[in-house]
Image (cartoon, rainbow, N blue to C red; front, side):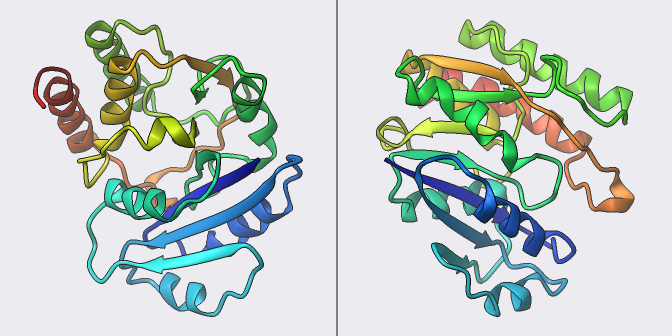
Amino acid sequence: MKLSVIIPVYNEKNTIEEIIHRVLNVEIGLEKEIIVVDDCSQDGTREILEGLNHPNTKVYFHSKNQGKGAALQTGFSKAEGDIILIQDADLEYDPREYPILLEPILDGRADAVYGSRFLGGPHRVLFFWHYIGNRLLTTFSNILSNLNLTDMETCYKAFKGEILNKITIKSKKFGFEPEITTKLAKLKCRIYEVPISYSGRDYSEGKKIGWKDGIAAIFHIIRFKFFR
């Protein structure tokens, strides 16, 4: 089997080389490809990526900034793996936990796996209101999708390739998270959650998501539940 790791990137010059190094070096017992999609970075990230020459690593560039969802769409369209896994370009999520994420898919229990930051793994203590916002969005998503997830907004999501091929992603920005969750629920996919660690960062360290994205997520949850 083959794993495709999709890394959407926007202005992450300080971490992009390190995260690629970590993904390349994690042992999972599967053939692995890395697909990096630069969403028109302006801070020097593009120049770093243009100079990369790593095995099993492909890099694609957007000519204008479109958002994380658009970068993921590009990555999904290039992926050849039996399993697709999303990895942020910062260092908040640890690739050494890939075996935990992949196990429910590899042993036949799951079609998709979410890595939850709220199931007991170690995490950096940061923003109270981000925590509350995340829990509210996850609860609202659960109400409409009839799921019992604890962390809908997590980056770490892994999917069977055959399941992802049945889903057309529309969201260009951070609406990807509620969209994919709603569509997995509509397909009655077997979704598992596993505990992961989380080394969150603050805005001075490059964090991008904000309260406006939370408001947009509410719209997307409703949109993809009730409209085609």
